[in-house]
Image (cartoon, rainbow over all chains, first blue to last red; front, side):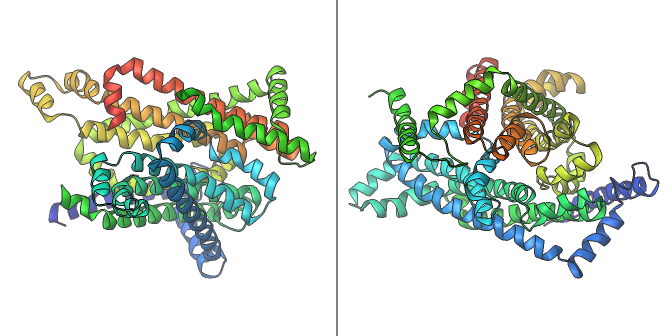
Length: 255
Length: 253
């Protein structure tokens, strides 16, 4: 990191601090009622209090668990199904149009159906999260597998590789950029659906926490929960970007 | 077999299987219903206008939010793309707000705006701003540098440069961004309705479930799917008409 970059970062930090200061100023002068907008000091105090002697940490981890489990399930199913469909022309012709219809369907619309089937339970939330983040992974995997350079398959045939060997040695590495992009999108969807499921089904977690805080007019607690969700969104997208960078380092070298 | 027949074969088979299974088992389940009675429920709800009114409410909020959020995102994206120092100074602020999941703002919206159109439009707008902002900024960053050299050689003023070179050159990618944001807007609108706001299609499906009417619930699900699919088809047609062959190149990118 060079000096200029550090300087710009410091500048952008100052700007962000300026916005927080404006927020504080608005709250201090009660331009917006403190019922709706507590100052950053009160939100921060609620965050610290909730993390130290409240159960906010517990809620945070409940949400993280839900999000990760659903996302992992969706990724496993999505990659396996996508590999099967992407490598077979017949399956693709029969199934791809149906998926194109299902793709724009808002995943949250499935929640009432899931509630009717599974009740207000943790399996319900898991099923909805997995269903929602399945599509980005599945469609990206199908695309990745069907866009493999045909000459690579010819090489596989020339080397008399078996079908699993072709999938694991040729198709999967070649499709991995698409798959990872799909998984990144899937993780965002998983976080959103975790929050919505917690709100609707009253399962323990940050979604439920912010809804209950709003209903009982505990605005500082509400903002503390929203800040935590923002941090969670940021950290999860940073983490998957780091994984992507590590796994795809060969791409930069190949170019 | 031609492509259309292949495309319809699996859904048709699944529907027939569902019909036979539900009829034979004589189910009184609260979650599943025979496809034929779902179709009847769909036609009835469309006929008495309730579903169309719900669709109107949802689309009004989705498009309202799309235009508000899209306009903010477009202006900010143009500003950040054209004035690099501003972009760098705002970097941390943008990166701190952007990762907040839009649904996390639902309780804040409930508290400060109450239920209704403006609440839903505000949440949809928040979700749409970022797609527009980031893709517009990238579109301006990706303009062929020689075009900008031409504008300097012709001694165009800043305004002329923006309206004659920058915006036309970035337009195809801005339209792609708009299409993505439109798809997003519908998803977020339905989600807000299911999670909190008592209006529109999302509320319709939730109430159908709570009133133990699986055929109406599944009819709503089917209808939401059809609206989403129809919107997607319309937007890609519009994109092709607006951009002609340029659209295809952008899609492939």
